[in-house]
Length: 283
Image 1 (cartoon, one colour):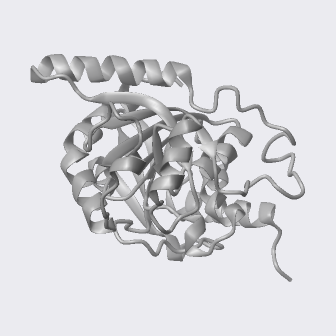
Image 2 (cartoon, rainbow, N blue to C red):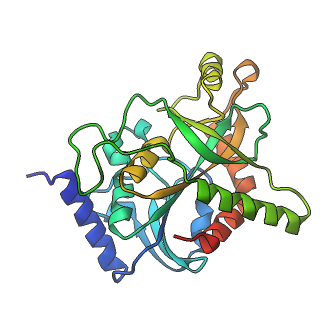
């Protein structure tokens, strides 16, 4: 008989807890395309491939390693997802967000979620980082559809502050400090993330529509995971790496390889920003 969603979450979290000697984890991280190298900064890591964990899906996208890295970062115990799952891979939205609930069961109190995104705001440039202030769910789906599990969260979770204001203020202060140390301002933007299903990059008319609706960046992840995180009571910091400009009237052809290449160039600033955030944030 197939296990229930709750049973699957508990079995997966219990299995990981055994592998990590039951250590209490403070912060969970989800690393997007080309940004997985942050996991290499984790000290005394325990590395667990997703395909080892009961009931876990497998990441199939280039640029996603498909493993957990668990250990110390910035003086806190973290669990890092080096690669995520996407709706466009054919997984249900409930399967996409499954790891978020597992991390909550492991004691995580806050989530740092990252992605590679196309910039729709004309003031952005490829290579910028964007703090996510809010999102547009354009996927046509929601991970909370269906019976609610009170063990996970309330039936109607509040989303008035999906992305934590205090966390964003800490990240802005750190970016300013980094800019002063480097003698060059860090290009840290702030804006609304539009989550689409993918896997195709959008045509000009759809990009123009999303920009008119208030979107500053567009990507194929994050929104479902953040809905689940808020359902589970986690505070969220979201960061997009703007890998290309997705302005409808000026759109140029784009490949996944180009996206990963720009993310790779942005990595040093991204890694330093997130490491300092983990060290300085109060949970």
